[in-house]
Amino acid sequence: MTSTAARAPGLAVALAAALVAIGPAAQAHERPQPTLADLAQRHGRYFGSATDNPELTDTAYTKILGGEFDMITPGNGMKWYATEPQQGVFDWTAGDEIVNLARAGHQKVRAHTLVWHSQLPGWVTSKEWTAGELRAALKNHIQTEVRHYRGKVYSWDVVNEAFNEDGTYRETVFYKTLGPGYIADALRWAHQADPKAKLYLNDYNIEALGPKSDAYYALAEELKAQGVPLDGIGLQAHLALQYGYPTTLEDNLRRFARLGLDTALTEVDVRMLLPATEEKLAQQAEWYGDLTEACLAVRRCVGITVWDYTDKYSWIPAFFPGQGAALPWDEEFARKPAYYAIREALS
Image 1: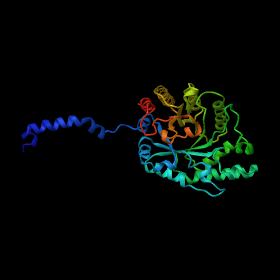
Image 2: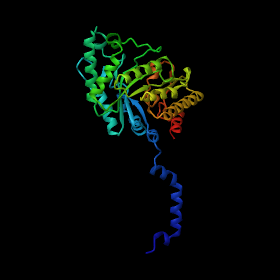
Image 3: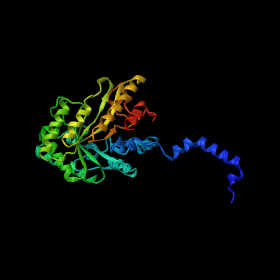
Image 4: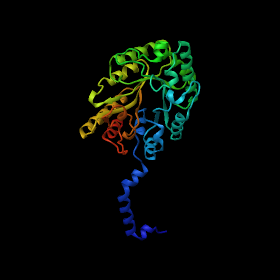
């Protein structure tokens, strides 16, 4: 049987011309551009974003959140004030919403955070504790929360921000009442409640070699020697252009790897003094690229999480007046030079 094309050569030419004309668009439709997560996975890494419950009603926001990333961190919904607002009374509403969103989108969850001096409920901060009372309350909080999310999260930031800038212990209610051993106890209790979750210590200004990161190195070495279940160190990487780039980041990641620990860049943003200029955005992009390359250079740096991905929902302007524009997407969800620098580094 003669084909239609054979009987009508003019039609065949027209069809071929049309296919050529729509070729790139069709090709793009057939093979969508890989996401940041896709590119990171090629290196055995993840690429994640923090998120928070109020923004989950923004469908333009959630489309990108669900499409670009394979790891989610709840910004606030798992913190102590949200999960145990009254002693012994637990509320999983906010945390569950984000975990369920992640699971529906085949994303993992970095759970954040069990023990932190900030955002504590009033019943913790207003009471004069005995060591026995606080130890019992801390253990109950950790184990109840970790058991609730057992099997549903990839990792926990077990203790957050335990050190001062000079490497001394932060004078928190936990340290002052229980001494430095509260950190090992917290890790043990979390491990008992979910033996498969990865357990991290997490802090800011520990990207470079220095007194604070040295304190974490010494603590990690001590914990490992004692057989305490510690899997990794989270380097928050809240950076600011005006303070300079942490040029010893890769060396720092390597020394923790030599201890047998994973590392992760857990809360990345790069803020600037406003207004943003092309020059500042270019420098920011360079830093995002450098951070990504540093993680890729060290096998045990397992992934990167930006502290939410869009300037629209950044925490920076509220806490650092006159600063902002810290993230790879702007307030209108347009990709900034930083986004393309990350892609290039991952590619």
